[in-house]
Amino acid sequence: MSTHNADSITIKNLEAALAGESMAHIKYMYFAQVCRAAGDEETAQAFEATAAQEVQHAFGHMDLLFPKAQLDPAKCLELAIEGETYEYTEMYPNFRHMAVQEQHDAAVAEFDEQIEESKEHAAQFKAVLEKAAKRFNALTKVEERHANHYRAALERVNALQEKCA
Image (cartoon, rainbow, N blue to C red; front, side):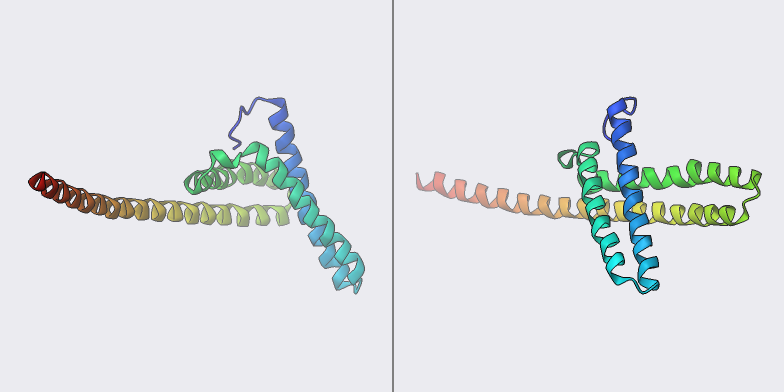
């Protein structure tokens, strides 16, 4: 999903680091909930503060994997669609298959839910991308009308100047 050579060891390491930092963020936020539910606000806040730092670490890896100069909203949506599609067509079905073989019913149910949610996410991103494309096309037509209006006005001004000259 990165914008770089997928065979690069450095890229694979950055992707692994991104996954690790992302997992740490979620894990620490989860631990904060557990601590808060147990009445330990101070520990919960410590986990949340560290989780916020993990997000910044992950963003640093994202900057290298997906340089902002190479992105625009459409590219971001395309990458999101690609990721969500991978989740529901390959990742979760493979995970589900293994969970069925191991008779881990709770995991099967979780993976089934994630498959459906990933389909919904991909569809939502596709709808946003299609809507953006329609808006861009409409904007292009408006801009073309403005350009034609200004062109006609310039032609009139030039014609008047030629008459006066």
